[in-house]
Each structure stands twice: as C-alpha cells, then as structure tokens.
Length: 196
View 1 (cartoon, one colour):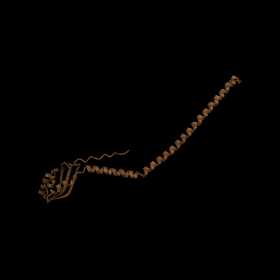
View 2 (spheres, rainbow, N blue to C red):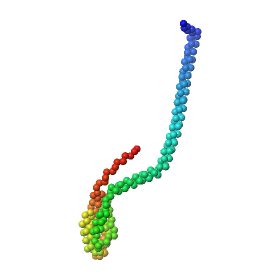
View 3 (cartoon, rainbow, N blue to C red):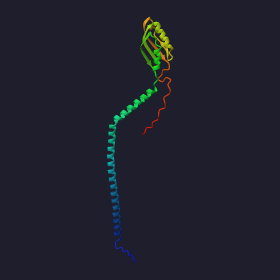
C-alpha cells in the first residue's frame, strides 16, 4: 500500500494553518499551567490562613497558661529564693552560744550587765552595765582581757570617777569570731541538672 500525500492547500494557507495549530497548542498549555498555578496558589493561601489561625489559637492558649500559672511561678521563685537564703545563712552559721556562755561564766557577782552587743561583721563587742565598786569594774576588765576571743577591752576614764554603782560601757575587739569560726567547710552540694 502506498501513502499518497496530496496537499491541495496553498503554501500560505498551509503555513497559516500550522501557525493556528501551534497557537492553540501553546494556548492550551498556558491555560493548563495557569490553572495548576491557581490551584497551587489557592491551596497555599488556604494553608497559610489555617496555619495563621492555629498559631493565633496556640499563642492565645500560651498567654492564658502564663496568666493562669503566673502565681504558681511566682511562688516557686519565692520558695527558691528562700531556699537560697537559708542555704547561705547555713553556710555562714557559726555558734555564738559557747562564747556567750564563757562570757557569762566569767561574770563576777558584783557586776550587772544591762546590755550586750556583738557586731560580727565589724568584730566588736559592747557591754553596758553597772558595777558595785570601781575595783570590781577594773577586775572585770582584767577578766575580759583574759578571755581568748576578746581583745583590747577599753572603758572611758570618765567612768572611773565614781567609787560605787559605776555605770560602765566596755568596748572590745573580737578575735576570730567571723561569720565562719573554725568550722569545717560545707559538704559538697549535689549537682542538679536542669532540663531546658
């Protein structure tokens, strides 16, 4: 069998027909691309809208949770600060009671103490009181100078003019009565890993 191609169309008409066919093909391809692009754009826009709504809801719930648990968070922070303060106070604790007991045991019967002030940061001791006689006051000053943790016991000379019922104020320096007085170092703290 034989194929016979018979072209009865003039060349100009034939070229124009090919041009129209190519134009329609390109037009159909462009329509398809525009249609697919519009579907993708619509999908992306709807996805963006839904994600934005979900994000707004999530942010709103996070803000609500923060408002709801704010008091709990503040309570936890306050408790943590209190625990830190207690730990710091515990680390700097040194007993003063044995020193006071030694001071009280050294007190003679003819001396009455009205007030006692210990300033640990300044390392000073102030004792106010009344002595029955001036000689009792001087003896008590010597006794205070013999106590190992007290030094430089001073009394103003103006307080020595009276012979009886002498009001006095001793000012002394403390030796080694710091916030940590010969105590062993604190135990090593356990390491707590915080989750982030």
